[in-house]
Picture 1 (spheres, helix red, strand yellow):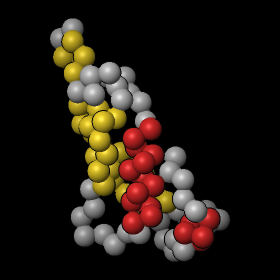
Picture 2 (tube, rainbow, N blue to C red):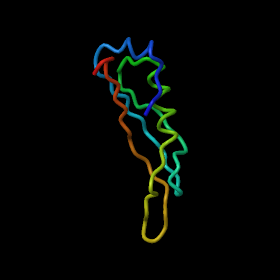
Picture 3 (cartoon, rainbow, N blue to C red):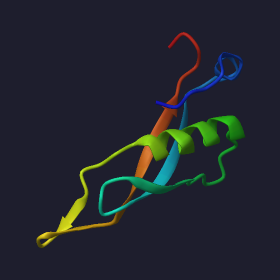
Picture 4 (tube, rainbow, N blue to C red):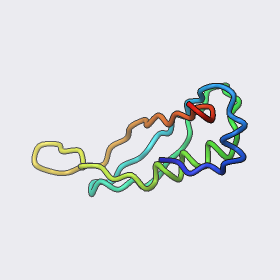
Length: 84
């Protein structure tokens, strides 16, 4: 869950989704996280919070045959207006 300052959370007027691409190692740790914004105007605070949250995630590693391998996926972080 992204950590967002209360003052920033109060400024969210409508739902916002921040897609974050993650690169997952063969051990299941996130090695890199990068927001995938396509023309959206999103606060850099929300983008950074989503990327930092993604870096803390852990996954069961992907498996090819009998070996664990690195993989990629998109996580979607959703921010709601205060009170929702």
